[in-house]
Length: 284
Image (cartoon, rainbow, N blue to C red; front, side, top):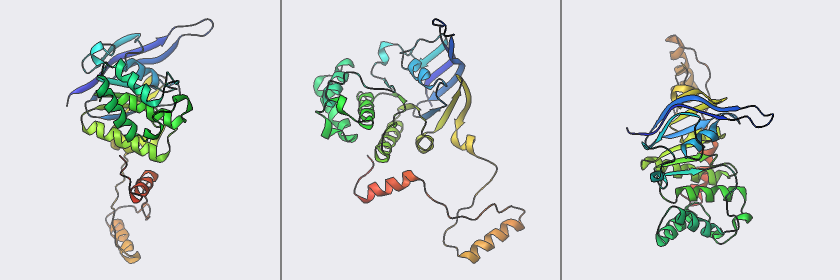
């Protein structure tokens, strides 16, 4: 599988200002991300997540190291449409309407007007913003800001998406829509790096995670590998209490320890997905 992102000995240090000492936002780190993967970037506030995304987006110059996105330096003009960055924080030009904002983004990306308009309508519809297409952005809720920011990031169908807290402020249905879009983009070959504090969403959608602490990588890998233990589970259906007792007895007879017998439950995302499907939605 092709490598979409390559980072070698990347470090970012912000210089001292006045009485404030220099800050090592990222210490030398190394990692690669394969094409078509969704990677969650985790860590506490100040761990370097946003700085890493800014470097990959070509908005922050590294202090040292080598970074390649789609085999090019992040600031390469050829990546303007191929890589999209959704930063955390308010959108610019909040005196524009949502539709005008996406038209402006399309112009900045060099899209033809008709093409930009068609793409804008498609993403406004998908992210449930058509009803607000003519409203000023300054009147939007936090969740609407987030959905519009994602629409802007998706406008040129980029090959790499760099998302900083893409579901912050969204309700469960909005979050589920975003997760569905990210899965679809990855299935189509796009690569996603997503900084998030929402651990359940990371478990739902990410193939692997990168955990930062004080600018260093503390853990990296597939969730199954990082979270798995030495216990194994057998999932059965249709047994009565006597049958369950028999299974437990058989396990003990083979030298196993029966830790608990419990009824498994789904997670809350599954509940909201069922509710949406029940009312005729698709999660798309």
